[in-house]
Image 1 (tube, rainbow, N blue to C red):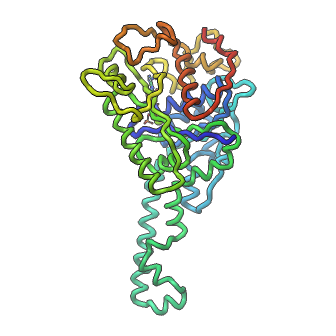
Image 2 (image 1 turned 45 degrees about the vertical axis):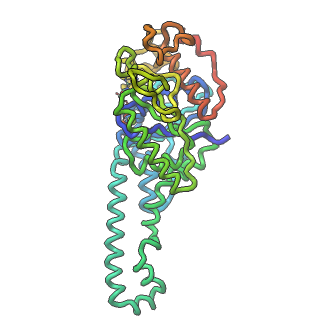
Image 3 (image 1 turned 90 degrees about the vertical axis):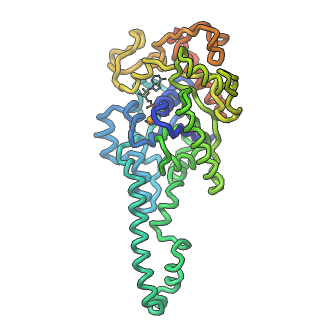
Length: 389
Ligand SMILES: Nc1ncnc2c1ncn2[C@@H]1O[C@H](COP(=O)(O)OP(=O)(O)OP(=O)(O)O)[C@@H](O)[C@H]1O
Ligand SMILES: [Mg+2]
């Protein structure tokens, strides 16, 4: 089987893309025993700092050029596609702060701020090419006969520079395909590849769209956060029109940072779930395809970015590896959330969860729903379930 490639995209910043990428990657690897490759495609490198200790980022990975920026920069420079296998972190134990046990496969390609220069570098290159083509065009007008004798066809090229591509110009156009090509050789080794995209529409996000089978969008149930979805969808529709091999599908949106007690969140959530609320019509079906299992705004999740945080229940703490979590439930399961009030009808999941739930169990259900939506069958290790109770 070849891996499903899924990008986490929303043009809006701060909605939880990196957090959701981490949750899905860790639950699939630790709970459901999927072979997971996580890729940080954001120059802010938030997923990287949440998953890998700075010492490994600086001393081991950056120093040996194992970063996603290498794939893009090498292609701009030389047209060479570096296979993803050359960029994957060589020691799986450096990834994630949950203890690895046998059978767990969670690999990662990290990001660094170098990636931030990518769009600018590309623009510089375009300008360089234009300058050269301009200079040659002037020359061609003056000495067309002579030039054509030396290089047959050159005059025609210079009068239609858009039709003929210099190697560098070609690289710049084809950079959209670099991630797809780079991933080819590793797809057979994983069940799923999760790509954490930056906010906004950059070259790297476009490359992720081209490389992916699905995308998922975390959204906060607030009007501004929802705008990002329209933009992503129209961008993808345009790309599909232009490039025949873009096959990405929308797997849905995951409501994140939901504050049940906040009226605005309740109203917007209801509209997303297709219900009428506050005299407003529901959003059209298919626009958000919301996941049933939403993620609450939880202090516990806010802290997860701190790699070495010690908010681990004693029972899961392993003194042999201080600062690390025993099981996935140890990392995410600390919160016990009570759902009350029938007013939260759109968000109410009491039938399945009971009146209160553990955050970790909720995230486990979310991951299960995610796997079903992307066509990954579940064959999980149920033994760790005990750790949650
Ligand atoms: N459900 C949640 N509850 C509380 N805090 C959360 C939740 N989800 C994310 N956060 C926090 O919100 C902040 C932004 O989250 P995150 O970095 O995942 O968003 P992002 O969409 O990846 O941002 P960017 O667009 O900058 O890449 C982080 O501090 C994160 O810890
Ligand atoms: Mg992010």
